Length: 339
Image (cartoon, rainbow, N blue to C red; front, side):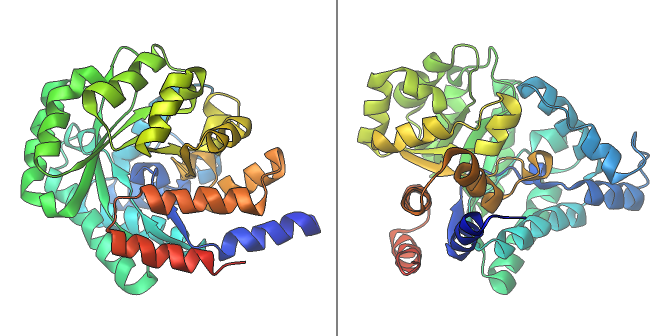
């Protein structure tokens, strides 16, 4: 049961209109949905109940998380599956007053299993349209390349995306970061920018060569945003440059607590003190058992974040989003009305 103080903060967090900029749609696949899709698609699972699936979520680093994460995706086969996946997430987002989302999807994780690119993106797009019309949740989709696959594969998937370019707002880079620097994908990201897409890349917490990766994001790729990016705090020059450019950093507190055993509340607060545009996000909420409001409340309960700090983080997300300036202004006006 919540204390009166925490209940008051939870009510405040719930009232805030929020934007989420770092959520993997495949990471919103809830255990119960895994079972229903497996049954529909005739797939035999290793686990007998959703609770057994949850019990297997024993993550201690990025590779241990990814091994379970990719295995669960096998139940996603048809356009209807991807539609349901995305719509279920948008329904949860709407229930927490998330009004705008820039979600990721990983097409290579599906085409490598024989699922057509069109099957994936058309299912997601249909859910986006329905969420906007019936839930009031607007969204713009980001195609993520898997960095532990080849640059040639990334380029092939960018080509696949061109007929669907109107369904995308940007490209990203995720998955296992070890020995897979941003420079590996410089050419495909340059092509994406030529196509009018925005650019972001994961710089996961405490990865090998992480400061060099952040530098490459800034100087070689010239990203429009950085996902995670906590380790930039180890280099004052990086912090200054990120703040100067007004780049957003999409931080995921509960995810961090699972993967690096640290909620990173102190680091998020330090980012704000340096004028860096930190934002709060859920990452893979079905696996970390925490959507947006749970991430904010973790900061309240474990790091004593104030209403002002929560509001600043929320405002940052709208400001560094890739929606039009007019829509940003409208959402920010809604945010400022919440007391």
